[in-house]
Length: 347
Image (cartoon, rainbow, N blue to C red; front, side):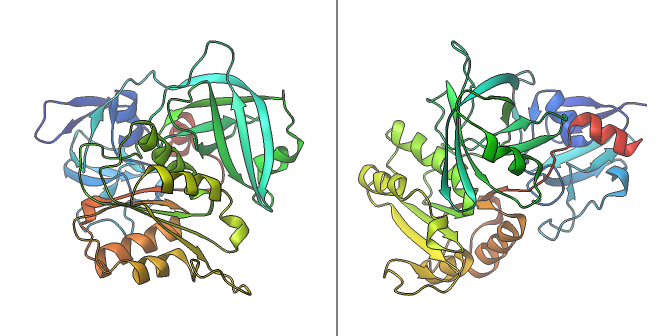
């Protein structure tokens, strides 16, 4: 049977169908809760269940090491009774905003040995309306999906640019080398709640690992477009080798147009003749070495789940960042489960 979910200290409530997660039910009702990976790996969706009973989808664990003791992962919670929940934040959205497009490849280039920059164009007259930091899903021939952040800013809405790391054995990684200009690619979006808090004046710290640079690029390009140069910005971008910091021209442009932007490139593998501006070590070590305190800052982290978790711990436990000022987008490889797959998993 369906259950009713209420958000504490509001008059908001929404139905939750059998086998539907709390996050999916909220999104279907036009209420966006914080989320990113939707697989229980990033903990962005962590919130409290103040009243009622829940269980993990398909027996999944409801806790993550980044959760507070009284929090659960709302992306994996299935209601077993009516609920009263306290998410960290929420906002109203249009549940029909995500749309499907048949885009065409405009340009495809290798920008590193294992990274493609894929530019897609939408059909004439169509636009993908999104917020800087959001992602889309590429729909493969077998119906499975892969999620990629838009690297272009929202005003470039007639197409999308994706930064795609080639994953050995990956389903879409096998398709990527064959894509040529004019080829069709089905996409759907936008999705995700990651994005800049524009009502804040706090200094900004962006930390990217590899292709986690993509959503940060969208946010910084959007800041340039809006003429938003009032907040100090520090950008740390890490990779195994220098080639993995593949868009130096974009960083140089921001340094010209966003006064005071500080860029810290970090390379984890030993290299000969390291340029003096390059930090030798991983991006978490660079964060510790280059910033004495994060008190009063906001940190936006993008990359693999293990990196995001390590950055959260480092920023909060060692650099004084307030937990509520840590925002992240965890890049999880593999299929993105949709609502029907989640329902079947719980059946």
